[in-house]
Length: 304
Image (spheres, one colour):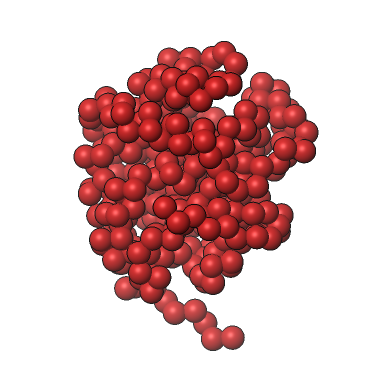
């Protein structure tokens, strides 16, 4: 893995760790990961499938994750208060994270990209399409939702995995990850515990900021409902959701597709809130088909 860093990214001037895979001349696809996730949470095999289908893959660490800037000096996040309606402890919002992502495109010299987001990354991807429409060639929103609190909520049994204090050791972090994905993973596919343990251990080695996940979670809550603004999205859009998603109820995917004009909704039986290996070829084919079709029908930018 060849991870690089871009400095002074976006309006916030943060550092962003990223990796580029495949032919830089191929259509770019930007992968945006979710809450507490890192660029390594996009499986190498899925990235390889995208490269094999003629795409140039960029995956990166969001602010407050992995090797990108962490806001250690920010005020303490208060997630219970945010969920109760007081989001004053938010250090940033999804709009700031979207601006980071567009800033990374700037740093890489990319005028636009096919944007693919998973979970919170789907929310960021949606926000980019709303607030920076000229930078998005196509949008794929996976296992995500609109911000409307009446849809896309986690089941109580999935949230129970987060009970108790954050892990303080590498082994505790690995065991917590195993517990979460036993409850929230894909029941229709084999549970690859060995791969999960490897990835969880590497994630801890790259970043074990115990407060960052709460800062990200408060940012999600503080950003509110995107449904009215999603109706303005005009780029070709694919919404993918697992029919057995316990972390983000499938109603979130259905609401996202209903809000975006012309969006295609794909519900996948047996899929939960993860990216199981047997689905990599299908997911990559769907993303690549959308990207290549969007590029083939895209209007060239107006001359300056």
